Image 1 (cartoon, rainbow, N blue to C red):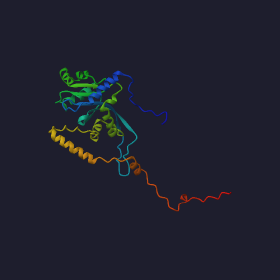
Image 2 (image 1 turned 30 degrees about the vertical axis):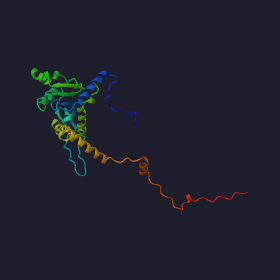
Image 3 (image 1 turned 90 degrees about the vertical axis):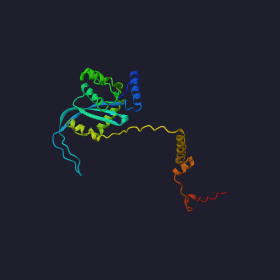
Image 4 (image 1 turned 180 degrees about the vertical axis):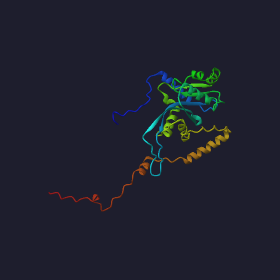
Length: 269
């Protein structure tokens, strides 16, 4: 490693009470059990540079890779809004032309009135970006509709300089590495076409077992203990383990010169 090589990192502040307080709050939210009536969502956003091809690429063949021209044309920028519900194994990414507070309010309202319309409240984990405010709903919608949406959201902000606590940021990192890296995307349609290549990596937690008869549970527990005892490997002593690990010494042949003693010369008297 040379002295010029550096790595960009999010270094948290030292001895900062505000940072610890917000971090503990986020961790407490993540420890909540799965509740479909009050789900926990995480959201994050990311800008994307749009690049348009100036010449038609040459398709890949069995003997050569896909070829693109070194010249390209900048086509502006776009923004990806990603929402994730970790305990349900669900995520959704949408592309917009900008990422203003109005765009953010419209994306959150679309989920509240769509997928989560039957939920009483949701917990939304997001960073401290200046566009993630309650006033954004009042600027985008009517006061009555904005008030109805705000009352159903419980905000949980990550600490300043601690956005790595947001699970949606990890989802965006996976999306970028698996779908966006190394591709020239000229418009929002090309970005949205990458979404099917981002399969879910989580699954919904299994349901809790039904209550059973205590006597039946005790009998099943005893039988399970006996099966575990039979499957448990036998204890091996240290001598046996060393004997299996070290190769056995090969016997020396009788005619080996190392085993034959040389005759001693007579001592002069």
